[in-house]
Image 1 (cartoon, rainbow, N blue to C red):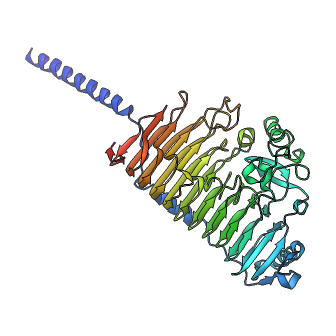
Image 2 (image 1 turned 180 degrees about the vertical axis):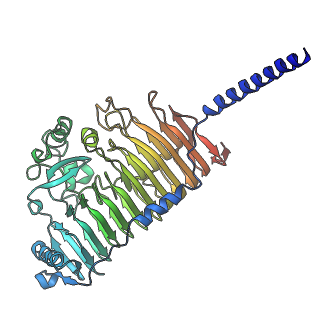
Length: 478
C-alpha cells in the first residue's frame, strides 16, 4: 500500500514538473529569435576571401597610340575602343589613359581588360546625347529597357577593371542630363519634357507590369530617361579601384546581375538627381571598401528589381560587405531598397563613418506592398555617426513618394542587428520603424549602441519588441 502511494506521488510530481517545463518553453518561444551575432562577421570575411584578386597580362596599350588627343575637345570614343579591342584580342592587359583631358562617348569594356587612368587623367563624357546611341540593354530604377548606353558599360564579360588615380567626369549638370528629372534646382524649365511625363516613366512602368519583352521597351532618343554611369551587366570578377567619379547623369556605380565584385578606394562626389553612389542589383559577393560617398541621393543602396521585373528575374542581392567607408551627403548611408522585389540577404556593414548635416539617415530599409521583397540578415557593427537629419535606423514598409504604392505583395523584414554604434546627433528620431500589421518587423537588436540628440527617442509601429543590450538613447538606458 505504501509503495502504491509513493508511486502515485512520484507520478504527480513528474507531471507537475513536465507541465512547468512545457509552460517555460512556451514562454521562451514567444521571445524574439536572436540570430547569433558573435560570429556573423566571420561570414563577411569569407565573402571577401571568395572575391579573388584580379590579374591581367603584362601588356599595355596607351590610348594616344590609337589616336586619342588630350585637348578636352576631340571626341576619342573610337580611339579608346580601338585600344580596348587590341588589348582584348591580345589576351588582356592594361589600357592606359595618360594625364590630360580626354573627351569621349560611352566606353565599352571587354574581358581581361584593365582600363587604367593615370594620375592627372580626366575622362570627360560627351554632352551630346546622340553619342550614347544606339540604344542598348540596360536598366532604369530596377526595370530593364533599351535606352541610352551607360557611360562605362560591360555586358557578359569576365575579369574586367577600371583603376587608377584619374577622374571620370560624367558632365551631368543643370544644362546636361539633370533637367530631365523635372526639378527646378536641377535646371528644369517649366513646360519642358521630363522623366515623369507619360511617354517616359509611366510608359516604362506599364511595360513592367505587363511584362513586355525588354527588346520592345525602346527609349533613348526622344525620351528623357538618363543613363547610368558605370554599369557592368551579367559580368563576373569586376574591379573598380582608386578613381574619382563626379557629375553623373543618374545612378553612379551599378553592378547588375554580377558576381564577385570589388569596389575599393573609390571617391564618388556627385550631387545630381538620383545620384546614388553605389547600387548593387541582383548581385552576389560584393565588397565595397575604403570608399567616400558624397552624393545627391543614397550613398549605397542595395537593389533587387522593381515590382514585376524583380519577381520575374528572382535573383536576390546577397553576400555584400561594406567596410571602412565614409558617407557624407545623401539620403541614406547604407540603404536596402526601395527597388527590392527579389529580396536582399546577408549584408554586413562595419568600420564606417557617416556624418553630414545633409545626410538623412544612417541605416535604412524601404519597401511597400507593390515592391514586396524581403530583407534578412543585416549586420551593422563598429559604425560612427556624427550627424543625420531623420534617424539612426529607419525601416519603412509604407515607402512611396508617388501615389498608388499599395499592392498585394507583403514584404518581410527580419534579423536586423546593430552593434557598437555611436550617434552624436540623430535628428528627429533615434529609431523610426513603420512595419505593417500583416508584416511585423522581426528580430531587431541593438547591442552597445549609444544615440544622442534625438528629438524623439523611438517611434516603432508593427514590430516585435526590439531587444536592447547596453544601449542608450539620449542618455537613457533601454
